[in-house]
Length: 440
Image 1: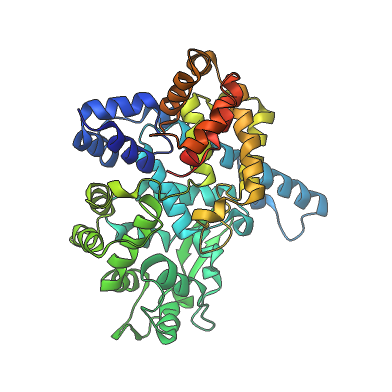
Image 2 (image 1 turned 120 degrees about the vertical axis):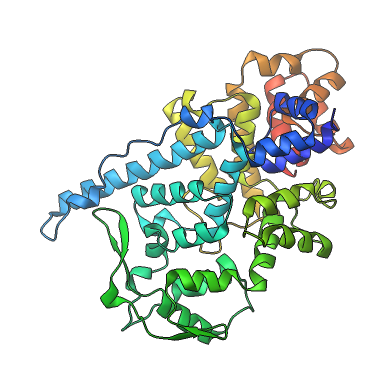
């Protein structure tokens, strides 16, 4: 049997909050079997099947014309907002229900990496298409994902790619592609960005069909010099050039380490190991395996502040609170709470994605977290509450740690929890906002 603390740490990082039963199962199966099931699941995902993609109906903008009235446009805007809320609620449910948890967490990572916001895109249909692209290509060859994303209508619109023509190149997508998506700052010049923008010219979006296509008349097919190479670069050859740079694998290794392991710099030996695992096929799955099996990984316990979505979905998973069974008002309160915490799915604050670390621990966010935790505790059933109401205060705190997959409480936290030990719902709420639960 594997060390329970070790597999609990792995599952906290690779899922949206493991249940105590999942940790028990992983400890019995062993680390290698658990890791294989996370990275390359072979069974069907019943949870995903039970949460199918929502039927949004037609895009409300598709029926608008230049002659549409003000009232018609207002109705279209209202329908658009309703579709966006529907999609956001569905995704939270999917994060909760999916059995292939690492896949869902990797999709959420890519959502923050490619950082496209519905607030500018204004289309649930385009955002859903992007999510499907990231889910399809989340693992394996990063080049396949990158090329698909460079054709993604939501990303193109988000970074003004539809305005990028051979007569008037727009540099936004090329700049972020190099700085935030593939290489990192310092690995290119302004001249490289300008030439890269020319490689991406000509892509347009049909808002009626939601598809992107290349218009050859708008594309610059001439020679371009990028990173010292001269060729008639287009979207695919430009992407291949960037991903062949030594800086790319290092950049991605650091991004994955930062989100799945630690806010501290990646150790040099670990970085080299991740890069070596990734390079043969630009394999994201191989890099994640190297990360989770690296000798430095166990020492990263307590290094990451849970992102609000991770915290909320994890709490619901551990308490058995299926969001589909919450009253509509409770679901709206959940999304409102995530808004108050600063992280609503589909709405990253900028092209740089969401913040991390202590940025999530502001005074105002702690108050919001307390309200959400109290709401979760109020919905908890007998199976959750009964162990927290039985035995000594010490036994109740141990039961709470097991429920929330917390390794141990500090003396300071034990004092705070003991003060609530006679009230199971309050004890649960306090546990959910404790440092030991919030920082994993």
